[in-house]
Length: 520
Image 1 (cartoon, one colour):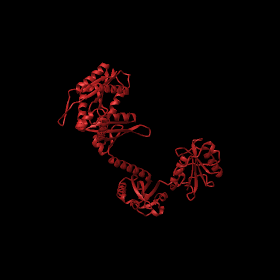
Image 2 (tube, helix red, strand yellow):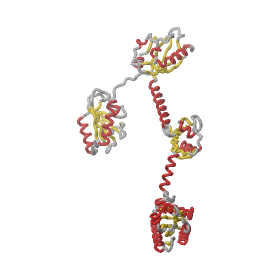
Image 3 (cartoon, one colour):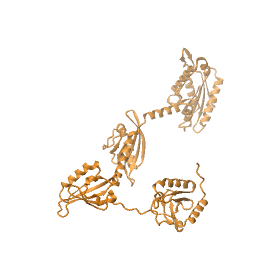
Image 4 (cartoon, one colour):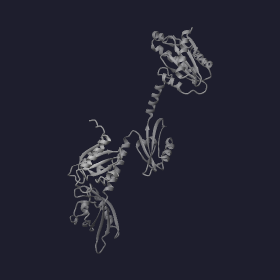
């Protein structure tokens, strides 16, 4: 369904006024265009409504199942100016209240958020949350049987302290960690009195889930008054979860880089390789821990590490073309910590690119410039003296095609093109601009006399140059028109038109197979 048109500012102001009047004492917040709560403008603090405090956004006010609803309402407010939705607040999840979002960016630069239906609720929308303890002290005898435990064991492992007395501590340890737990305990027993040993183990909560602890066992077995082992058990579940998340992310990244069709390597600020996938190892000969030794990109690496910027280049290696994309890596302060380098074998891409460029530039039959490339040459600014344009047209070409076939016509065209290129050498451009029409462009031509001489030389190259085809002798018959212009004189189109007109004049007045006219 299409979005509703956005409500005009006056309409949005009216919705806000009506909502505030209908719900005195409701909760109110200012929402930045980013969606995060921001400072409430003084104008709204004076309304007497209660400001929302605590969470960074409206998502922190509602239960998890309603967060998608809030996001949808936010998008509607962005598009339509106003939106509301029914949600269950965290402070009273059994209740259903209404969240209103009204766009006042036209005047205050913010959106207004209102939570109605909780006017009688206590001042805060965030319920009190008990702080879960992280440390519990457990006492054990020399056989690791629990003789006492702090009350913190309840929220940490779900047991009352009395329930643990008389139980072996190993019974609480995750089976996969038994071997490490026993080794640490035996090591602790061998230490002098008062020494301690530390170990990280998973313990099983009453409900079956694992809780990570860092356990420091203090050996007080030689204490005559209170012999035993005092274990300080610190909950490190969050830390271990973060480490696992990092490990999983690293594994995902490594697996991802192995599937990508390119080499990926990372270097530190000291240019030593800290990561390399198999493809990069082949393309760059790099190994983790070694300095990067790839001369082709050495300068680019230096530039990226020095400027915290990017660099892209191509280079050749063992007959292949490699594209290198370099990106700087920085820390939170902006300091460069290294660079990521992506290497891709683009040999085939370069070949195809060159093939496309060739097709876009050259006539496939004769190898001359095609019409577009030829005329583009004339558009380039001329250096030195003037420019000469020689327009060549094959006389009787249709009769050759009709009498001997198109293969014969093609053979004649390629012969004429070859003779023109040979005659002009590197001093000009030969282009095929039509079926039987060629255009020769020469720069740095001093004047009309030199231009005419070029035309004469081209005719000489074509004279007495028959070509044999299938037992037949084909003799080129050509009419030539020459035009010249000084720098800044005639434009490209005018110069070609003058040469074309001269060619037609030569065609009309010719008395032999070859004819030339210089445009006036």
